[in-house]
Amino acid sequence: MTASESTPTASDLDRSGDGVPGLSSARWIALCAAAEAVGMTAAALAAKLAQRISGDARHGHSEQ
Image 1 (cartoon, one colour):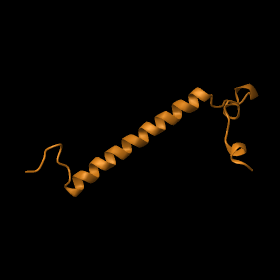
Image 2: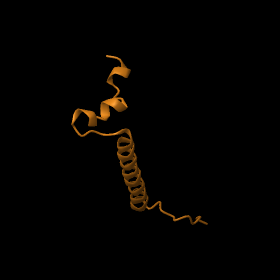
Image 3: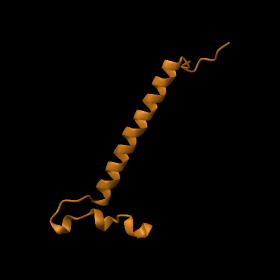
Image 4: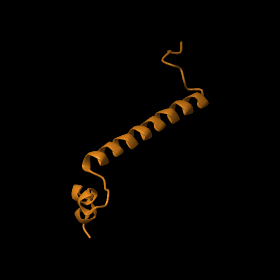
């Protein structure tokens, strides 16, 4: 099996013609974008929490 055979295409994802609800390309992209936003937000919050726990949060103030 090659990589192109295992990668779903838009027609594979959109099964609305089969009578089975599927994902259109637009819906698939929207769901991926939403998942990416959730993941990036979680990563940013984890980084901020780690800085506060380690005592490295200076909030933009330079130490003199």
